[in-house]
Image 1: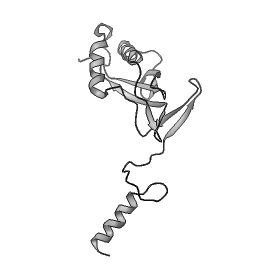
Image 2 (image 1 turned 135 degrees about the horizontal axis):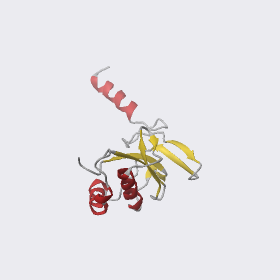
Image 3 (image 1 turned 135 degrees about the vertical axis):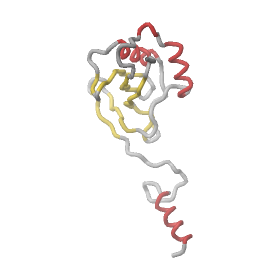
Image 4 (image 1 turned 90 degrees about the vertical axis):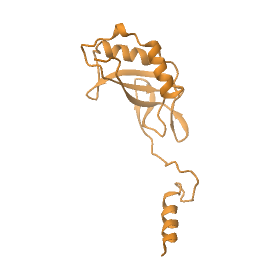
Length: 149
């Protein structure tokens, strides 16, 4: 085989869809992973093709934070690095926002965690996650540092 034959074979291996037919879509087909949240009565996806995002992306999110963060609610004496687990439904509504520490939901959040969760819950409708081209309820974890020590 010459170099062109190897390239053609290589290209055909990585450009076929699930049916084995050659496609023009370079997007890989991902298996979306999910679980059933009995409390929310939702199928929640933890692995999605496109994660939920704040409308307008990072620049709009930064602007929203600058406008809505209440610095008086923060405590620089405690850890300023906050992780939040969000469940955003297929219509973009935040169904759950909870601070997490050591991969567990926080039962008694500190001042910074409370403020960060408040910010998320007040943020309105998000662009929902996608799986198989459809909007789905998705769980994401985001880090947030609301104060500077």
